[in-house]
Image (cartoon, rainbow, N blue to C red; front, side, top):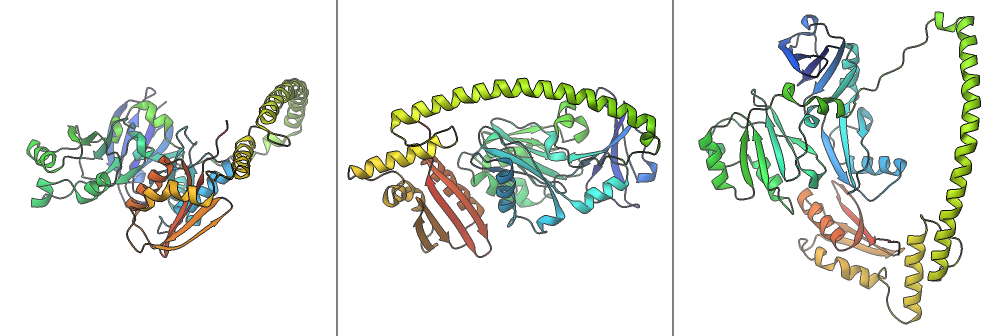
Length: 408
């Protein structure tokens, strides 16, 4: 099956030409071109590759959350990062990884609606067409000079746009300022920076001498058409399809009879399978509940216990035992503040506006802090064994910390 993929570096327009490529059934590009929509070649299906600035790829590290709470937490993180209202964006949230990272791809609704008008069946971000490196970043620059940077696993594989700067005396001797700031903001900078660009050897040598943050390597210029076929298939879908309305023929009496028969058969099989699955699940649930209750009884935790409540009950019982003995508990005000003291000491003098302690948690209100300072602070607090929730706005930065609850 031939697939036509069009690269959009700007919103669609009738008079605007876009780069396109035809791919065979094995995912290999065999023809490329550039033209307006009326001159695009025919393909069995059409897909859109959106430039990194049209479909930003972000990543957030959050504590384990349910699907509904994860959506709310992501929207809270995005509120102060976007110039346009959240209602104008389609927010596609990926699955939360074991290390807590969640990748998010954004696209404006108006852009996606325009793609549907062009019979585009699938759309995804260009930034996902380069594999995440375990030890380095990828700076991908097209022959036209447009580019983006894909961070490594320690940053959740997020990306940001960065074009190749025009030749100048400064850019010949040092890396672009945006890239230097991003690398310097990292607590643990990447070991490698893979530059996919047509870059003269003398410029690479000058950049390497001026920057001792990581080692630089030069790869062939970035071409999205040369990406691995598996990456096209794995890219996050940004254009969910709308099922067409049923035709008149599908609503005929014969169709209804066939559908009713199939539904009846499926219902009988479903009931039988459900009874068997529920019986097995109830037995397993009873065994698990009995095990948790036995563990709670041995620890002296009153009431019923389960896998979701034991960490909180364990922490509460431990704190009460410490208090009865005249000792402090980890989630008391002073011990909790002591865990955070070394991290808070690095903040600028006068940054703190207000601080309160309630429900075993400290809430701090600061003057506006830059993104690098916020990230460093939150990273250090988590390393100190604290659970961190934060939010920033133009008027200030708010941080809430408490001890992480752990099961025995």
